[in-house]
Image 1 (cartoon, one colour):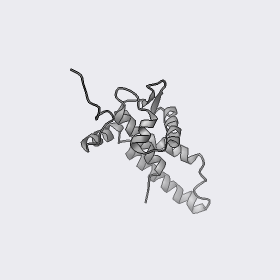
Image 2: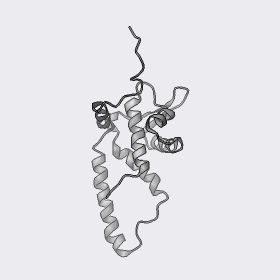
Image 3: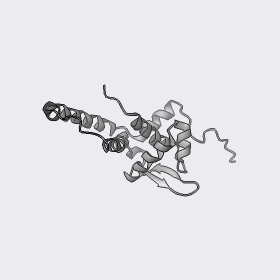
Image 4: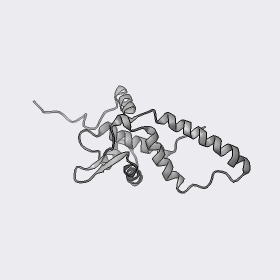
Length: 149
């Protein structure tokens, strides 16, 4: 059974948190850590990779943090998965040394992976934010009283 790695799930959660909560200010890493339970050390590493890949942008300063580099409807789950997959593949051994593995199994797996990524490319952060809203997931700041008149 195909299974997403824990790193991949955490990265998707982090980017979704940014997409869902970054209005109007960027989302700070410590807030993501608190809301999602993502270890700070891992979060900073993956967020920097996502910034370099153009999925997120980092904002410096006392009110800094992370924001999407593009509109929510233009950032896909596939974008995030590719970045995390690249991190995982850096230390990975070749999947097979046998002739059948190299000639048949690995190409089959690569083909299935491409189909899977193509499906993930059709799911945007906008779609996931809409789903979170429909499910009643609270946003950061929803519990802050509004005293405007």
